[in-house]
Length: 109
Length: 110
Image (cartoon, rainbow over all chains, first blue to last red; front, side, top):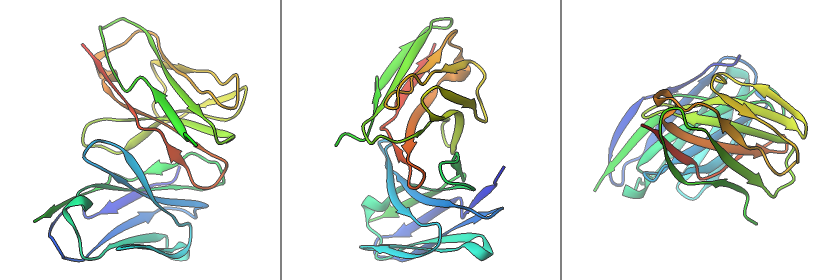
């Protein structure tokens, strides 16, 4: 099956800083999603982005499908951005999502 | 629109007990999934279903069973609970594109 790797595994930011999280996947994908798991354990959908670029407020994401990676950008980070960010991918429509190991982000005030 | 609803939110089981984790979605999605998340780890697929009456194993199916008698419901059954099944369980659904997750069930087996 598809392999998904995320980097870095841990990230400590000062409030206001910008950062980039990376997701590499081993095969062509039909679905690529980014999630934020908040400190209460909820999985929040950030982006559904099998290709191209999307922006939502201070967050944006880019997937370069031909080169098998996706990037999540956090600008002007806030303490509420703390948590774990997961990338997940699948090869076919409706196919099971494979998750990466996550990037644990701590934003300090 | 409720999305994906899981019950219960928390549960403590004794070794050897059984229970069913409930999952319901109101989006008329064909595909449904059960994942488990161990502390500090990513999510691993337990079972999935591509439609009513069709289920298949994921990466970590041992110790679990599922059924899919309706489009809306996808219950996960633990027959003989073991400490290794202590985890957070997530249900998800999709029509083929973006997947949506429930709020999770935190299960502890003692």
